[in-house]
Every structure is written in C-alpha cells, then in structure tokens.
Image (cartoon, rainbow, N blue to C red; front, side):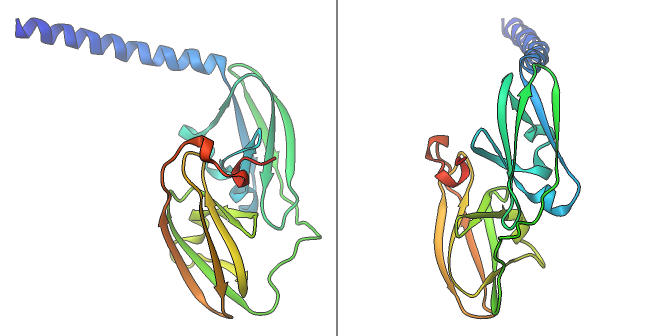
Length: 203
C-alpha cells in the first residue's frame, strides 16, 4: 500500500513539474516586457518608476527582476539626483519586449555640496532599496555600502529615507560636522506594499 501511495505522489509531482513551464509560458504570452538600457554608470544606477511605483534601478532590472507588465500604455520614469528626470510613455504588447534607452543629463539648476562635506555609509538590508536624501533620490543602498563607497553630502542637517515596496520605510535625521563620517545600519521591516511611502510611489 505504501509503495502504491509513493507511486501516486511521484506521478503528481511529475504532472506539476510538466505544468509549471506551461503556466509560465502562458503568463509570458499575456504579459509584455520592458527593458531599460543605459550606457554610463549614472544611467545604470538611476532609479526606475513604473506608473508611479519605484521598482528598482536600471542595472538590476533583468533576469528574475525583469519588468513584466500587462498590455497597454505605461509611464516609465527614470530619476537621479542632480540629473533631469526622463519620462516616457510606452505601449506594451503581449509577449513582446519594448526597449527603452536612457541617457541622463545633468540638471543645470541642481545644487551640489559646496564648502565642507561629510560622508554617510549604509549597511542596510535589502541593499536594492532606494535612498532619498532631503526628498531627492540619490541611488540604491548598494551604492553607498562596502569598501570605498559612501554618500558625500554637505555638512549640516539632512533627512534620510530608505524605502522599498513591500517594506516599511526607514527615516532618520542626521546633523553632520565637517569631515564627519558615519555609518547607518538597519534591516528594513517587511510590510505590505500598501505601506509604501510617497517617495517610492509618487509621480
């Protein structure tokens, strides 16, 4: 009897294994893909918003993080502090890939640190979360963690926010002395996508 049950279980697993690729294929025929290409480091580290929702940075949005969307019109925004925001509307077709090329251009009105500066390093999980300094997107956590990586900011008071859909925002205020170097360590707390703050779901 035991052998018979094991045989049934094996058949069930086999059926599921055969069915899963079919389900994935069916899903890919319904959804369309948007691929974003950038040539420079700035292009590749810029943040991407789809229909007002932050989804990650250009370089990582491939493979298992590729952008799959329902057919129809979608708005893609690419942002980086100190650069002109790029916004494009694309029409996604079922089972097809739409490729967007981005080339970030410096914003002539942007203000960069002048005078004394300080450094902020991050040790935050997950490291793909978006980092906002004084409400402006400056990159992902990964860019400001590890050897030789830090965020150079003007000395003084700053508001720092780290956010990612599916997690609760982390916010803090810092008041930095000239040449001061600090490290901020935290693990984002899992939460609902409905808890995403306005910074990662704003238009």
